[in-house]
Image (cartoon, rainbow, N blue to C red):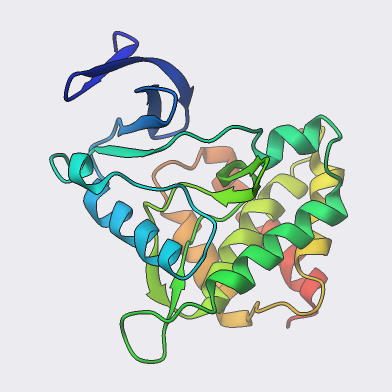
Length: 231
């Protein structure tokens, strides 16, 4: 990739990269997020973001008129501030506070009704790398996996993602992340045994997972159930 992207007449430099997408500058107010794998649906993702924002949920604004032209390109508000991971590593936020913020974001999201009766909006990838700590408070990004369903699954996936790091003795942050997990699952938590089981199944077939991450799923599930006092 050349390091530049074009959206209409706008070009910009690469300002960030994740496992499946790159983010490019458009101007001071907007960025373009482009999926590399061509498996997402930018228009659907943008629609979910606008829907939860209408309920007051903290997400970036989306420019839907530009997003609708491509399955891979999402034009959204440019935010300033570190990810929760960056703030955590820098000592700006501690494990207890980070876990409490994640739990609050999950509870707030699950107050939003899904489109099917009895369901709630789920993010399904809500972890510290997908939370930006802006001057106006936390903002949740990366809604590609969002769907309607039972909140227990959302709690299960957030917990399993953290637990996979917490049980990896090769990761220097394993201990602090374990403390973050404990804070996340402090009462009140919406975690369920069914949610943990389904979260493990989904993580096992996630194409972005490394072999090492898959190998740690069993130990991660045991840790989550132990912390949450689930059978």
